[in-house]
Each structure stands twice: as structure tokens, then as C-alpha cells.
Image 1 (tube, rainbow, N blue to C red):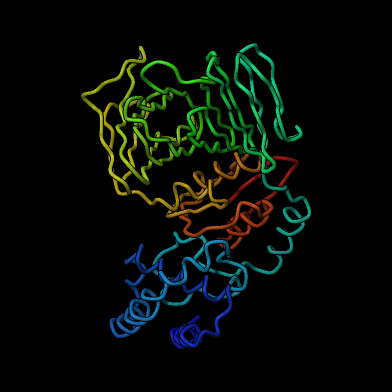
Image 2: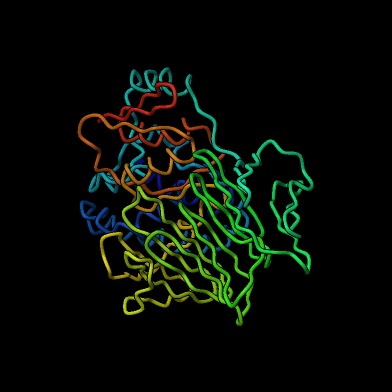
Length: 392
């Protein structure tokens, strides 16, 4: 796509005639300018001014208006545009994955279709295992709605939409329960205090059926999103392997997967304090950080310092809202998410691609929909059973 074609498409959008795929392309194109100024390094100054002026004045002011209308329309950036050549505005970088939009040779596309599309893998679904205090395990994905169990004055209900809820009586005694999701699973529950929890794939939460004492404490592994009910007299604490998060009432996401380099806590609303735990599980207050909405705390397992940065909130909770979002993610980061959600193993052969990926795609897509992103960057992909083999 050259400058003339781009401006023609932009004019089509301004007239309200652009379809969903064209709008998605324009949004991706705009994000490219916002996030990668170096992409313009090889464009002459005159063309650069024209393109930047067009994008800034014609797209930016309309993107916010589009967001609410498109909240439920998660259009991949690569459907119609895969045939486009990498025009001059794309030449400067080879790290744009979704946005390179380079055509793969036809023989390679046919090869990919036979190895990926014909051996496609369905996405994950709502499934988990509830382990009661007495050791009894209840598989949640195939259980009927209604009362699943009763224990010491606590009734565990499963609603029609698959939501697990704890209902307590006045004489209820606390017991410890655990809900675990497998790879390829996710689940949502409401704790006894009304706090809502979303569990991502390959994650677990351990919690009391009733919160007694002067705190509300749960333990997690993997990734979870919390909407905590406010109770100033009884702080809510989320404990993981390396850290503890203390809140009163707030919305936040925490990612503690063992195969990620850092624990990440992203605050959307309210206030939280993130502290590192020492080898004995004691809080190291000297390293604690208090987050404001829109901030993210990162803590590496072998470090004491907690780093605070501006968060990409949409990226942090994309999984909870039903899609993947990548913001300059490398291929290994991307495939770790794919591995967990599609319950697949990923094997890299040869040199690992240094491409970075920007974009989003619905998690309801079969795995081939995500792997086409790699195809567009001329990365070879093959599915063998539940193993994805990537070679470059």
C-alpha cells in the first residue's frame, strides 16, 4: 500500500464507507505511528508530514468515538490485508508482526494450511476443579447448575452462566477450598464477602469459605483478576510465591505464572500496596510500592526491587475480556499465552524470530487464527497433535 492508496482508504473511512477490516487496519496503522516513531525513519520529510498529519487529525479524534461501538467486535488485523506489500512506511522496521502485512509466498501458504488449518485446535473454555476442605474434588465444567456442595454452614452454588458462588449462614465455620483451572480452562467465582474473581488458564486460588478475623486472605498461582468488595476494617490480601498485595476495595489484575520473568500487578481502580516476600514468607516493607490506578508493579523472582510503570490496562486484562492483546510482544511471550489457552506445547527449532507483535485477536478463534500472524512474518508453523512447532 503506497501513500496514495492509504489516503484513499482514509478518505473512505471519513465518509463512513470503510468496512470493519479496513477500520481495523487504520487503527493498527495509527497505533504503529504512536508506538514506533522509528518506523518513519526511511520516509522523506514531505511524505512523513502528510502521513502524520492525516493520521493525527483524521483518525485520532475519531478513535475514541469508535471504541464503545466496537467493544464486542474484535477484528483481527490480518484478514483482508495479508496481500499488501510492505510499503515505504513499513520498511524501516521488521519487528511489527501483525502490522508488517507482508505476503507469504503462495506455496508456503498452502503448506501452512495443510499443517495448521487441517489440524486445528479449539480454544479453551470454562472449566475448573473445586477441591473441598475434606479433599473431595468436583469437576465444574460438566456439573449441572444449582447446589454443588454444602460444608459447615456454607452452600456452594453454580449459576446458569457457570459462575461459582459461596453463600454462608450465621453459624458457618470457615474451611479452605481451592479452585484450579487447567491449561485450556478459565473460571469465575464470587467469594463469601462478595469479591469477584476471574481465573485465567493454568491458575488456582486457595481461599476460606468464610472470612474470619481481621483480614481476608487468599493465595493464588498463575493469573487472576479481582474486583474486591470494600471493607476498611478487614483488608484483602492476595498472596503469591514472591509477593503479597494488600487492598481495601479495588479492581486489579495479577500475573504470577512461573514461566514469566516477572510478577505483574496492574491496578485499574482504587489503591493497592505490593510487597515482596522473603524466603520465609515475611513481608519486606522496605521494598513495598503503593500503586495508583493505571500503574503496574513488576517484581522478578531474583530481585528485591519492585518497579512501577504506566500500565497498558487493556493488555493486562484482555484475557478476562475474551481476547489476546500484544503490545510489542516477542514471539516467546506470545506463544506462552497460546500454550496456556489452547493447552498445547510449543517447540522452537532453529533461530528464534526477533519480530515483535502488535495487535489483538479474539480468544474464541481456533489456534490457526493466531498462528496466521506468524505466517505473515514468514515464520514456519506446524501442528503435530497438541504440539506447535515453530521454525524460522
